[in-house]
Amino acid sequence: MLETSVRLLRLLALLQTRREWSGADLAGRLGVTDRTVRNDMERLRILGYQVDSSTGVTGGYRMGAGAQLPPLLLDDEEAVAIAVGLSTAAAGTVAGVEETSVRALAKLERMLPSRLRHRVNALQSATVSVARRGPGVDPATLTGIAAAVRDRETLRFDYQGSGGEATSRSAEPHRLVYTGRRWYLAAWDTGREDWRTFRVDRMRLRTPNGPRFAQREPPEGDAALYVMRGVGTRQWTYQARVRLHVPLETAADRLPPEAGLLEPLDDQSCLFLTGADVLHDLASFLGGLGFGFTVLEPDALADHLRTLADRYREAATPDP
Image (cartoon, rainbow, N blue to C red; front, side):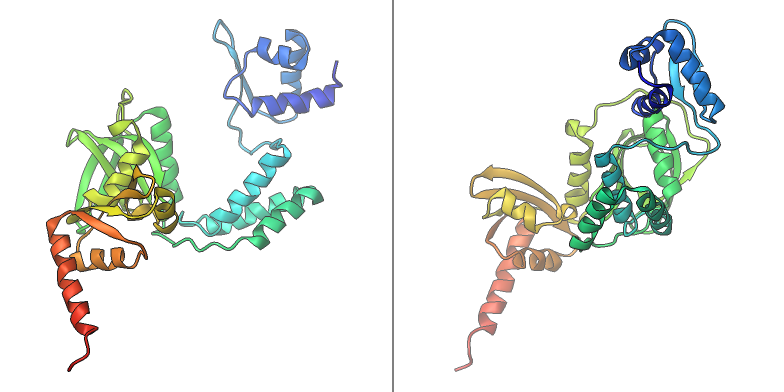
């Protein structure tokens, strides 16, 4: 049998990996009796950990939400992952967490063994971020939405549209989607009885949340795909379908996620679904990609490209 101190550390680690454990499962993992598990739970409570327990067929143990965060038991890979994540958050788009992330990272690095600290420092020194900063998002808004997604509670919020108009909305939140620049929420709009994509930085949550709801199947079975289609096409005045004369992997390396949606066609080309509010902006963007393309839709974009081609040809022809 393991020594009591070692067993308590393993017990803490197990409690942090799952929402709830039965006494029998814990006893089996630790190689002890159910009574020993109960005694160890009492020892954890004496040490200041809040461990909740319930009886009956569905009873078990779970870590409670105490007044203070208990020490976390992390393996090497988890510790490195958290350190790198905090470094990324320090330069992210969630407003107000940069300073907090730096403080948390400083605390974590002080506790890391030297072998792990060297790994984290090497990765940080070898990495340069060129990600474009998007609009800041209130952390409380993000966590509020995430909790509503988890608990399947209807969200009530004020929303500012792209034109500045404010509306009161009610929606069943499905998934948060981060494109690398902005945060979006895929949700079922109860007032419009349809799926909608909301920019999180334009949302102001109202409390309390509405009633619980039954989970719906997202459009095309994929919330992220639905959001990317909306971000890349439906929000624009001019929606375009363009055949790019390069393999999908090549196009994906060049195009940011928020530019639109890529779909495979064959080994040498792919379909690009994108758009813009101004035709000239869209034509300039496509022309600057550095590889060939063919406009499939709309005809207005093809006509604009022909006009530009005539203008450039004339500009490149010397006067006699």
